[in-house]
Image (cartoon, rainbow, N blue to C red; front, side, top):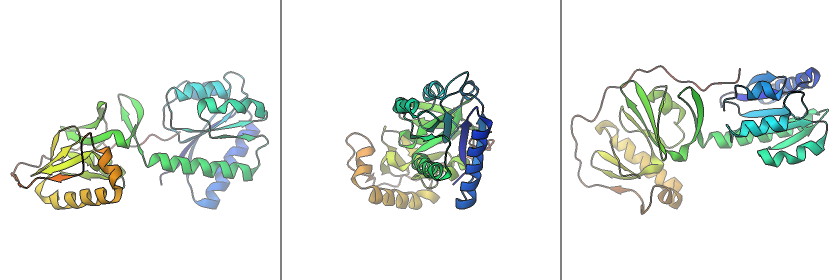
Length: 280
């Protein structure tokens, strides 16, 4: 797993250093790597917040902008980040449910309690990461649910992410996305398409039929592997996969004709690779 991106928002230097020491101790014990950013007030993190963090440790009582207010503003832009409050006054943390906080830690924070909450947070991050994709579009970081992505397309040095709600033009290469989604039931059908198998409802000759009716070309060299991957996906996912591929879909249908043509591959594009923005 990539490093866990952590934000520590704490105006007390001693308490802040304790959290940093605990993160180092946890790394030494477990091998989990962290990318950490430190802020001395809620205002400091909110000003230019982008949804790139996995976990936030938020002090509640701070001078300019308290942790609860900061969390509310963060939730307007990021509904995935795990929030853990740190406080000397537990009565303030009781409203944590309003911002979907995972829990709170009572100062002075003992390592055992911190370790437990950190492990819970990391487990939650891993579960969420399995079902989401972080992309950069229009200068913003956006987290997409993988179930909403139908396919990713490469067109003339541009990557287009097709979703149930529309299309997004993003930076990167198709190879980059293929590597990032290698374990997520996406298949490279040709040099132009990375297809979400969840949304494939059939195969007709050299085309796969998508849940929205679109036909996407499957290259001849990749067709056998594509059919194998699709069959394995449907077998592993069972009825859930069939229910998720579109209204009226009862499973994968395979056309009898081959429909093979020579022009089923376009040259791969050579874009600048995209990377997930870490906390810095």
